[in-house]
Amino acid sequence: MKSASAKLLPPLLYFFLMTGLQAAQEPKLSPLPAPVSNNAVAISHDEGGARIFSFMGIGAKKTWDAITTSAYELDPDNGQWTEKRPVPGVAGRLAASAVALHDQVFILGGYVVDAQGGETTVSDLNVFVPVENRYYRGKDIPVPVDDAVVGLYRDRYIFLIGGWSSSAEGGKGGAVRNVQVYDTDKDSWMQATPIPGTPVFGHAGAILGDTIIYVDGAHKNPFGINPKYVPSSECWMGKLPSSKKGDFTKIEWIKLNPHPGNAHYRIAAGAGPLEKRGGRIYFSGGSDTPYNYDGIGYNGRPAEPSPVTFAFNVYTEQWETIGENTPDPTMDHRGLLVAHRGLILAGGMEKGQQVTAKVTVVKLGRGK
Image (cartoon, rainbow, N blue to C red):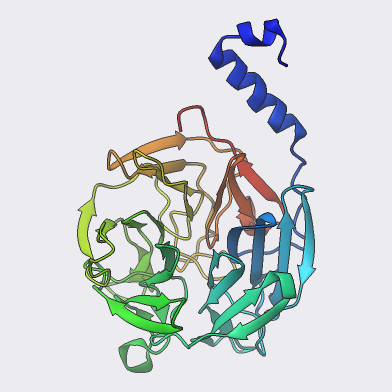
């Protein structure tokens, strides 16, 4: 039985006391076993509890031979990482996407780099089964993409939105408008309404409920090749059917106002919980300078991370600034993970284009 003093605590004070106690009991999240950037991340919520996964990416040297096939799993209950079986393939990948669904993690696309610096987008769909520490192959992506936005719809369909493909423009390579939808139940692909604006890669976004949000990215310089790629400031919302009988390949695209902050490229993004009155899609870090895998911009200048963290409220359909001076900002992300302790970013590049093993938790203020 609770004591009389506990009963007399004001509800708000009791809430903060319990929240503080829970935070004090949570273990610190250990760094990744090795520094890595541009790694595909996902969070699962299966019967064994939440798990965080990191796949592939580039190591501290930031050279073609520092691209890894490594896979790691983090148990938030003890804060420790476990190395898992490497992702299949003859080489590691950059700019892949990952989505966890039930007891599996789907790892999609990305690109490989050869010793001469040549880049090739892959069509691979690898499915990781954590409890068995094994992979199996799903059906190849129809239009191979890397640096795409990924989102999960109705706990079944994975959307791949835009991205770069080395097979585009007659094999010359370029950003694509395709919105590709994978049915995890049938191991099959469909094409949905293409993105309406400038085709981009390195953009950021997610799906929450029946709402798609993606922002920015980079595209070819329409005025020449110096620099070859320039940032986009376009922000888009896609509305999916709210009814299960609706055709989810038909997307209503609506252009949005610019978001807070000046980052445009490889911002970390992730969907928060779906609430009765909406919910939020969060964004943190990234850079205002499109860059190659070594962190040097296509304009020849080093890229640096933005300290701004912001969100899109799917209920009010408005942008919200979470923090203008996020401590120790990072860039070069393939997603962030929304958890009760905050926004979790695993790896990435810090100031000075330094690849890090840190796991950063961006705290969310009350009411955010």
